Image (cartoon, rainbow, N blue to C red; front, side, top):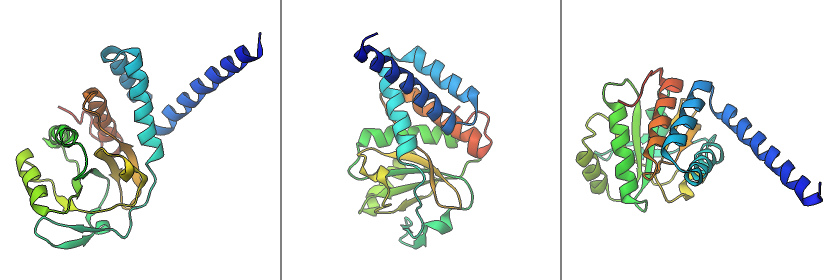
Length: 209
């Protein structure tokens, strides 16, 4: 076997090993992985599956485990709160910025609203939007009467560099966990993400109706 052939074989073996390691590092449940793999296999082409997996794991690994202590959140009536005071157990957080794709924000909020219906899941929205009126309009348009929206202009986390809205789970330790960047081109991936975190953090058997 030629040198370049040996290198190619070793590279492929290493790639497979890394992917397997990442899968079991992120998820505790083998069933979740099997469901995600099967759903992606059915609805996506091989090229799309590769892109979806790369984006999925890139966000889950690269952007999590950052502490958000010391941040200030502004409520829709103008009151200031420490972000720490708003987190009283596992909380699903949706983060968007005024510069993000508007359709991407709407897509993710629609998915989150479905998850919130009939589920006992603590959820909040953090908006990097200088004009509070725009946040109120967005909240009212999507009918989020029971989910609090706050203005937080910067989180100083690597995920802020991405020009897309994103989700993560945060507990009392204030660390970002299970960061996920929704992609409206692959809606099933967000459905499965919400189901997985529903079971892992909130003991929900089926988080998406």
